[in-house]
Image 1 (tube, helix red, strand yellow):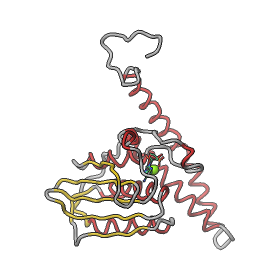
Image 2 (tube, protein in one colour):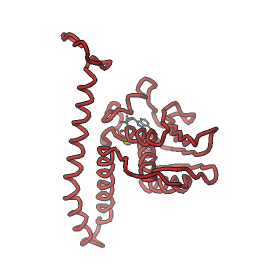
Image 3 (cartoon, rainbow, N blue to C red):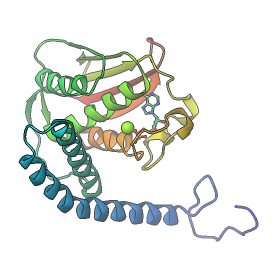
Image 4 (cartoon, protein in one colour):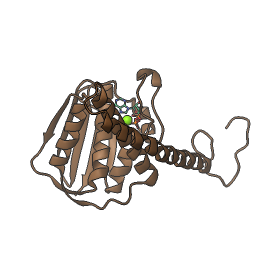
Length: 231
Ligand SMILES: Nc1ncnc2c1ncn2[C@@H]1O[C@H](COP(=O)(O)OP(=O)(O)O)[C@@H](O)[C@H]1O
Ligand SMILES: [Mg+2]
């Protein structure tokens, strides 16, 4: 901390800022995000109703897709702000779940190969897990041209790896990118709409399942995200 004495009894973050203050700031921003997301839902619903009247009009379908995506994003922000603790785990066919998420990501333009080893039945919170994988595929397709996703049993865990051939993330930033609202330099991806919550949510979901997610170099040249779910 420059020019200011450390106060005894406070825990300090590496940057010299008391960690309680960082937590308060994150809480404040999370509350604000929840408020904004909530407020935006009403006009968005109105837009959806009006769009329904424009059926068949040129460009209405694209607009509808955008509105749907905005709605999906808002749900994501609200879920993050709420902590998404309410969904109960249920026996889920992971292969089917991945098929669905991948199909959706392909519709958005992602070039994605999916390899799943047989029928993988796992206790999951399906909506949360879908959101987690969607976030990772969204990142990978944004920064890379080709994405490969594999799922299978490894020892006493189910593993899902997502490989891409993009620029990757330098090893010394791989923990930081999990922090809320943290993004790497914007110059690399001008005009992208993320707010830096994708990986935060993804890790939150995995840890909520007793597992975790880590990042490494991908053999395909970019980033590898590895999801582990203990059996
Ligand atoms: N597959 C990837 N390849 C390169 N960089 C990535 C990848 N995934 C995430 N990142 C970096 O990590 C940051 C945080 O990602 P995320 O939490 O999903 O936030 P957002 O996508 O909203 O920026 C991104 O801004 C980007 O700089
Ligand atoms: Mg993202």
